[in-house]
Length: 167
Image 1 (cartoon, rainbow, N blue to C red):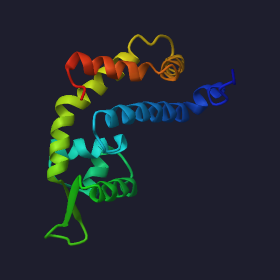
Image 2 (image 1 turned 180 degrees about the vertical axis):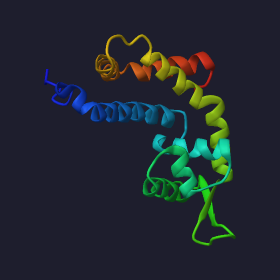
Image 3 (image 1 turned 90 degrees about the vertical axis):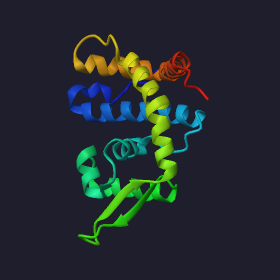
Image 4 (image 1 turned 180 degrees about the horizontal axis):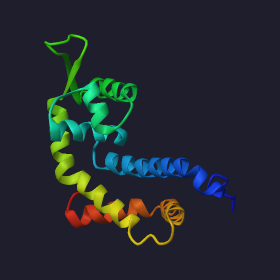
């Protein structure tokens, strides 16, 4: 087995470890979402959810709401608009400010996600993170170990079956 060089740096590399754990969870969620017929990338789900729960927003408002840099939000919005999930229009007050709203396809996906997809992901991740013992670094190590076994995919399928949310 290859030594985890990043893990050997302890707290110094905490951000890197959190990021890679997040990316691993997002990759599994993406695969599961695709199996459920959802074509929107999982990384764009927070924008979909924000617009679903809070209505149309400017790019800047979304960036603040999601605590993501505005250029990243702009890229996501551009991709989502190309995919037909959102529509944008200039505001009357300032033509430079785009107002982003869900398209009809985006509204349908968000409603389905809120009812069938997000609760499954939430339950699976909650169970994945349950009962992690020790210091935070030890908990991250345990989370990384669980993720490496493929248990998150199993949990998603199990939680979906429990909720009757599989396609």
